Image (cartoon, rainbow, N blue to C red; front, side):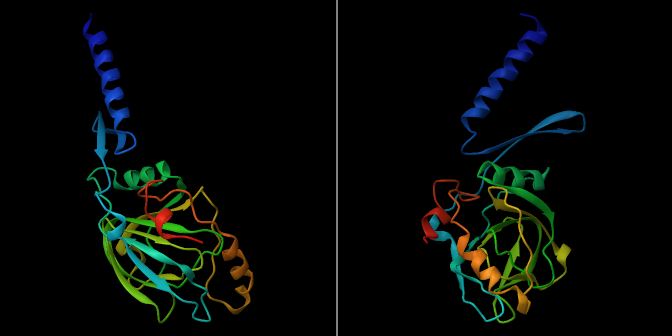
Length: 215
């Protein structure tokens, strides 16, 4: 067999081995400095019992939700190379897409037609959840936050203090609401129609919100 033939055979074997890990690890092939770099990383091991649940009631301005915000502390093993691509692909593989790559707004806002996941791949900040009197939560690189439809969230620091990937179940197009008087009861009606996703952005169909969020 020729040298090129052996390289081709080895590459096919490598692809086969990576396929075996497809459902338990994240494989990404990226060009870097003239080489194809294989990123083989996976979320940190986490059980459902370690997920922090944050309940936020309607405060009269923001509807919030009967479903808890889910906080996965340190769930992401963020790679040095292409961290945003890693988080985006992990979410996409678990059915959460229509992703954005940015910070978090410095004003209260919420989505009435979809849930949202935020995965932090750089920096740290403090978010406020639930409105002006809501819970303050420090988030940093590696953290994941799943925010139910209706729950207000705001960055208490600069919006670019963190860089994160946001995504939505089934690639939903999200609306934007700010706690204005004319938003309700329209947004309340929207929230009632939002279903619990079949797949968790971290655990997939094996746990997470599928076990915790029950409507």
